[in-house]
Length: 298
Image (cartoon, rainbow, N blue to C red; front, side):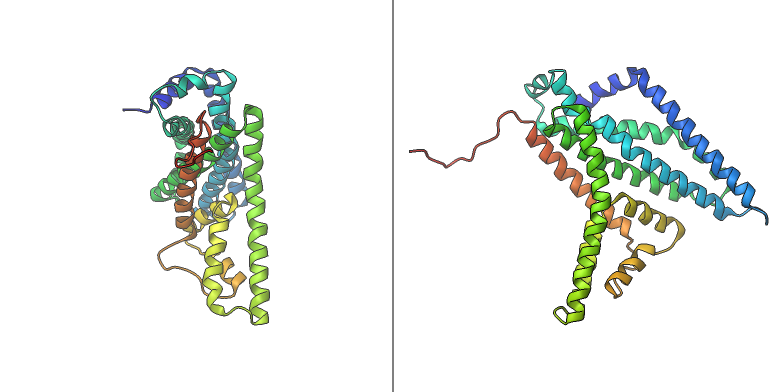
């Protein structure tokens, strides 16, 4: 019942020694970061053990893992379709009974398999922090689920550019630049929107009732920003509402929900955008586009 493309890529993935070498390097780097953080905690901890320091170390490790996956996933996924073109094997996939959707989903699942392998392999390192306490199992599960959703979104971006760019190196570079662009661009867009809103509000052109509309628009725009994603998850871990406070300060109103946090909205938007990007990718790999019926030539 497995996707044929996913089943084939899974076998190829585990036969490639580069995967195991990269996994070993990733774990050694993560272990080094963890060891450095714990040493800094021991140096600065003069008044006895403080579990809050372990929570900080855990969040730093999570941020490092999220940053690493941001650049690993495009490097692996950007070759999903462009690599098939370079090997001249894409036509063989297209003549099978699989649809374009099955092909792109199978390629994305292969990337998520690698992400899952990295997450599972890093669990013993996280177990070091669980030994000290201060980190909940539910928080770790939450971070893992969010990393998978985030990885799905980043992988969908890489698959999309892989369908429209023929060279793997170019598709990888464009995917990374696009992620960096949305990180910077969404922040600038929010500042521009808030600036116009405050200007029109001060001039009396808009009423205060537009504050929730502007707040929702800011959340939608910032939802694709990886930095905002990380802060939103950190908020849920430490029990703060930093993002809600920042949004309320920007639009000068009380815009928040009692049981919902910003990362809830981000997760939903990531899933929606991932599906849309995969739909577009499936259409891009079709050799012949469907023509609209009903047109007559005369």
